[in-house]
Image (tube, rainbow, N blue to C red; front, top):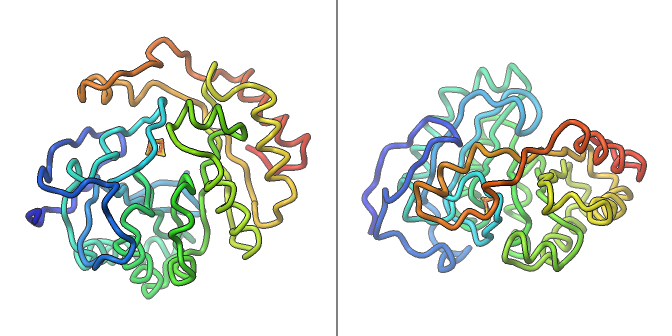
Length: 276
Ligand code: SF4
């Protein structure tokens, strides 16, 4: 059993490793476990980029994808996170709740992948809603089949990362299958769940026009998708790969420049998406 630690404020750019060495492997967490406790990387208190209004963003540990451009490989494993209780998270969140409500913001749970520790994140989201906060997750959708109606009812919106429209590219870039993400997107569309799609633009990896076109055509008919957000790749996470002794293959990949970003945003718009 991991020992209970302190909920750490900070930034997604902070490196945190080896904090709970006896944590289970992230592949072993059942959605039905008691979610009273879970593993957290850190939290930020004043994001304006991870959903509407001013947001607290909680970065939970655990992800089953291995994106070759991941900025936060220290969120992949539960053992690198801090073991904390839902109660502790909600107590801390309550300090910010009046400001978040008055600035039309709320809580976004990111990671890592919020649906790895589904029972834990569901408890936090339900508690946030009881405080009158707007709630969101940022997810790859890979574990979307785990999301039951109860979990979805705790969410006001979803930030859904669609990393590619091409199964081969998706597998090469993430190590996993594309189909669960598309299935989850279709489910959100059928429910009319407010969604922002996010696309990480990585030169030489995801920037192929046909790849972008495929996502644009898939998303354009979905009335629940308010925005497609193009997120340019950067090297801010490179130091984490080095510090963790991981094989980082993108060390020579340039950041996505304005011309490329504009081309991709135009592609989404021409397909009928609201893109930025
Ligand atoms: S889904 Fe997100 S956290 Fe997981 S490997 Fe990909 S970029 Fe990293």
